[in-house]
Length: 468
Image 1 (cartoon, one colour):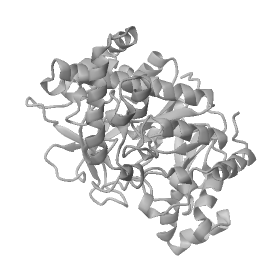
Image 2 (cartoon, helix red, strand yellow; image 1 turned 30 degrees about the vertical axis):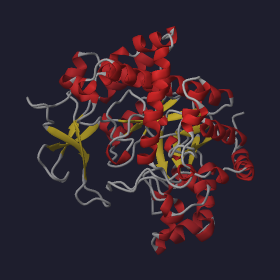
Image 3 (cartoon, rainbow, N blue to C red; image 1 turned 45 degrees about the horizontal axis):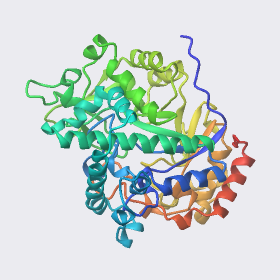
Image 4 (tube, rainbow, N blue to C red; image 1 turned 90 degrees about the horizontal axis):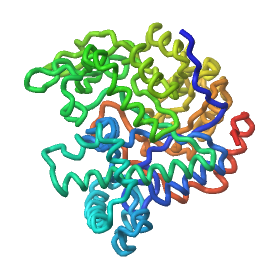
């Protein structure tokens, strides 16, 4: 197989969910603070801004349980941008001061933003619908029609949903263009599976393994491991791969085309599922008794490459990795992931010195504890190995981990913002296997100082990761 790998320059990135930005309206969005963050990244010499999925939030406000693989979350719309567009007045977006600080306030954000978005919609309706809107709804009809009409919507309700997605696209395109002009590129995240109640399943049930009543016959998850004795039962329906093959993987082509309309590069969450997927019979209460089933990963990747003319993808190759998974990743030239928090036991796959050039190295991902919290839970052997390899410990552990990641051979090092700020366990983004308390940390504007940007730029320069 002759595959030309996507080019990744030696560079650095920062991991921060869009929701974790500072904001006036309860959670981060596509407004002024996103532009300020891009400016901060540029001043720090950072090339990549990695986000989490930006689709409609699911149960527990999880970005990984979305009701659509194509739509954007309306809460991420900037009310300030709608004022700029003449659809809202400044007085329409004056929110209580307590929404500006502290953790993400999903409920308060919805209660404030949804009426304001309706006001903007009414103002937009009174104007002539422009050619830009008509082009958008025509180009995205393959998913937008089903999304807008879900739950039997019609008339103004359906038009409102189209309006929200049109505005999301306009605001997204503006931010992405602004970032690109400043040499900041965006990395997205595509969960391999979709939710059982998602529009993707309800509008195209033939692409999934469902019974006559529309319920999944087998559920997704992962097997038991050292951290989860019962495994993890995610509960998504499995794909009917024969149906996808018969349709020339049209849904996968469209899905990845949509993601690459939003992002420069996309991380495939649970890349293992492109080789094998853990199948649990419907009715099981845990994932203990599942089985591995083959997935036509080569065919999917061939279809995506044919559609996009390349594969600007990152393989999230964590978990129950086999030689077959690694062979699939390498056959298509995809960079895998190394997580340094798992790299301080003997002969670890994730050791700093073991990171190959074609990889993305992280001190920690959004599913890990912060480095400060992680250090407190290490055993004596791991702490000793960490000191020996890095010379750091205790109060310097977060900065040491960031420096170590930047100094590896991996072409890309991505640092979680909490670790750049040296923050503790209370700021952790997500704890897998828990349903509450996740996705709520939000950075303060006061933390994004010029001095911090300057120090980070010096590190990025010293490790030859400046790209502009």
